[in-house]
Length: 243
Image (tube, rainbow, N blue to C red):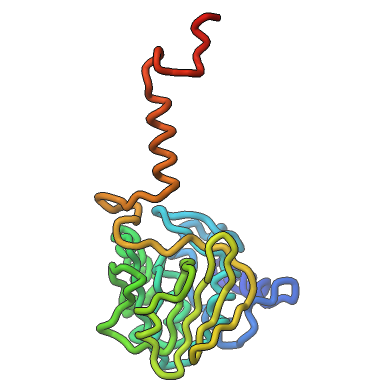
């Protein structure tokens, strides 16, 4: 089946009342225009409403992308920052809405940045800027931004991102840890738009391709478990030597 037909079917399903995540004509047109298979690889799975992983990063399901972008509510000509470039698909849809030159994306993982750049170029959006940065620090040299989208969860909006919002600007992000809510921050006010589940925002040293990662409590437990299992036989307290 032709990709354009698959795209139309995908957006039709997202507009249907069963999901109802695409509500605006602007987003509908944009998602129908972007060749999602250039970002995912396989044509058929690219247009299924499922999430998967690529190069250690999560590829958001189309319905999740739609929820984020409807909440962001970008207008043509808005300057937009996407924190968490991923495969580049969200940035491409935004480029259809606001224009390529107005979309900036950052990701903390260098290989993800290279992948996103290649995907965007292959799909015809080489004008989108993608840089390797600590997402919590944003992209101050291009600020202020009318819209900021954070595709990772944090307990509160990073101060640097709030400082880079233009007057009247809007920031959209998942807020929380175990329980997360899609949150809109605008004029100092927060509005929650329902539950979501995103990976946490990483800081420098925590990305998968870092030379030395910051150790977390989970990693400390994992190190201890591996160390315990690596003991020689006489050290293992679970071996019943008398039996």
